[in-house]
Length: 266
Image (tube, rainbow, N blue to C red):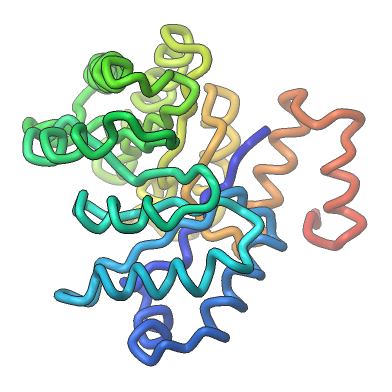
C-alpha cells in the first residue's frame, strides 16, 4: 500500500505560520482533518520557520494535533533536541524526518535515534552535495541502511529519499532516480522509498501533469511513499490509479471507492 506523508503542517507556509503564531487551534485541526480525509497516512509536523520559537511551537502543534489525529505524526526538524522533546510526547510510533550522511547532521542524529522505536526518512545527501548518478544514490542508500542497522533500525523502518532533482537542468535526472530506486529495492526489498516529487518539474510549465506522470513512473520503479499535499486531488488520484494498476488494490476496491466519492475523475 502506498503511504502518503501529508506535508501541509509546516510553518514555512504563511497561513500555517500565522495560525501557529496566533495559537489558532481551529485552523490546524481543520487542516489535519482534511489531510486525513484525503488519505494521508502520516502528518508531517514542521515548526522550524519561526526562528527562536521552534521548541514551543512544536510542542503546541503536537498538543493540538495528537488528540484528534488518527494518523501517526512525522516529526520534522534538523534539531535533535526538538526531536527528543517531540518524541517523548508521542502516543503512536512516529516517523522522524530526517537523517542524511552529511557529517554534522549524521553525527548529531545517530545518538538521538539509537534505541528508539520509530520510522526514519533517510536522505541520500552527503558532504559532497546532491548525488550525480544513480550509482551515487545507491551507494549512499546502502551506507544509510547499513549505518542505521548498527543501531537496530531495521530496513523496513527506513524510508530512503533518493533526492529528486529538476529535469529542466538535465534531461537524465528522471532516469537517474528511477534507475536508482529499482537498484535500491533489489538490494533491500523491505526498505521504503519516499521523498518530495515536485522538484522534477521545477522550472517547467504545466508542473502538475509532470508531477502526476512522474509519480506513476516512480511507483512502478518501487516508490511506495511520498511527501506531498494530500489535498492535491489530481496527484492523489494518480497515486490511487497507479496503485491499482500495479496490483496493490484488491478487486480495484480503493479505486472504485474513489470514483464513487468523486475524488478520481477522468
